[in-house]
Length: 166
Image (cartoon, rainbow, N blue to C red; front, side, top):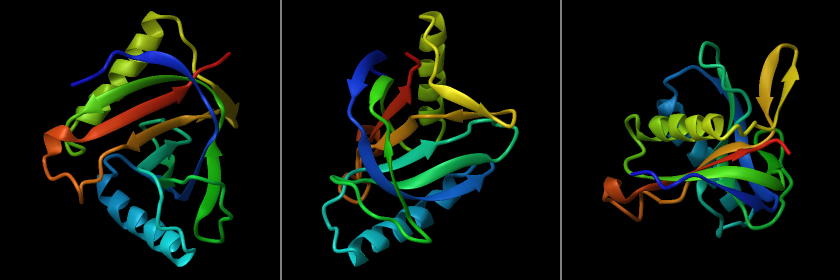
């Protein structure tokens, strides 16, 4: 199930993550990365952190995707050689909420729906070109439901947030 897409202003949102380049499908790479980041957070003494995220830096499906896999945090942290600390930038975002399993193509279809809605409404993304590659300045999937706490996959919620150009 998909919510209606909408535009909203968002504050900067700090997160910690491990950056990687992956080919599609990449689902098998995510759980070990989230485990490493959550263990890192625990070693830093941070036990109260937000939902899991994937920040998409590049999205050319014919090549490896540059992504950051981690968790939202309540305050900025300092990363190290393994875990980066960054923030989704403040700005206007197109958002959509997908309810359903993380596995399968539901989240992919939600991405397609949000992109299609933006095209139909003449909304441009906040991206930049670096050496002929499109880089997103703010694009994330935020996995709001913790599968360890909710076993019913039909109740899982994923928020898509794509930064739009001014």
